[in-house]
Length: 113
Ligand SMILES: [Cu+2]
Image (cartoon, rainbow, N blue to C red):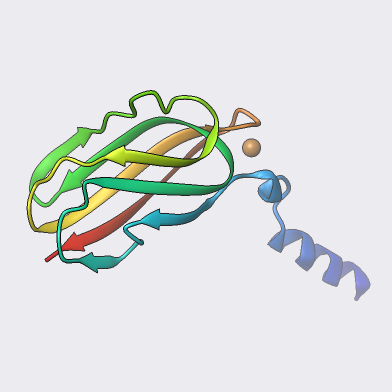
């Protein structure tokens, strides 16, 4: 019985997962609706990460790569200028490297009414 409990605990805690940075907050928030196209987007991570690529997809337009500027070193907070495509849903996809060298990626979306 004890062995079964231990195995169940191990299954819910994949090794290494606690060491990884994750997104704490985005601006605009994931899934939110805003009244105007924001001039820039924000990404806030729990630990340092080095962003390598950010892409913006908007409705039927094909995804475009956003300019990271000089934000190419390890940091927790990033602010990236956002080109305006008017109203509609924007999907932001990011890629980066954790401090342990592991590739990370994620996405968030928001809608401009
Ligand atoms: Cu890792």
